[in-house]
Length: 193
Image 1: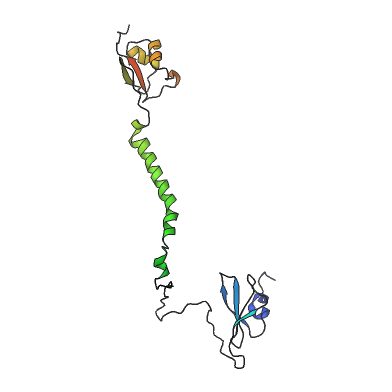
Image 2: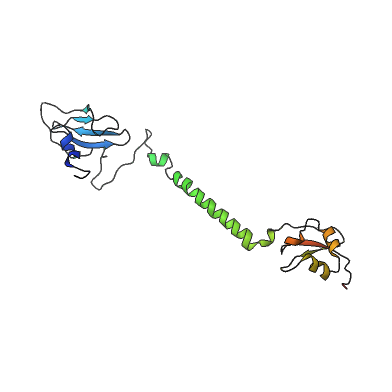
């Protein structure tokens, strides 16, 4: 036999003439109606339990059993549901901004997009801003390192010794000389031998 059987249905578990008519998800209670039209509610969180009487009809005269949902709101013939109102008559949808949660949900997305756009602008559109601007002391000139340059090539091309170049640029590491960095050179170039 499978997991679902006919014994899972209401007619086998409820007393004769009783039927389930609704469920309130806020309180976790099931609502039932007997053949006399009396409404009963079950215990909180239990599908089948001891029932307590909620409202009742006249037990001396049987009433018709309707298949209406207890929770269903009254509607017009065109299907319109009225908005819930506060005591002043203002619709609750206008009193509390329901869409504020949507903006809070989208905020991280827009923040990520903004950060990515800033990174693209910083790295692609303005690479010159990535390296710090170094100012050279008086009687020196600044040289922008090109790809393929080495400290020895720069000193030879500008007529100074490697020692003079290293004295003026104490923070420059010749092993990892990166294109785009600035080095300071003496302003009195000597002719290279």
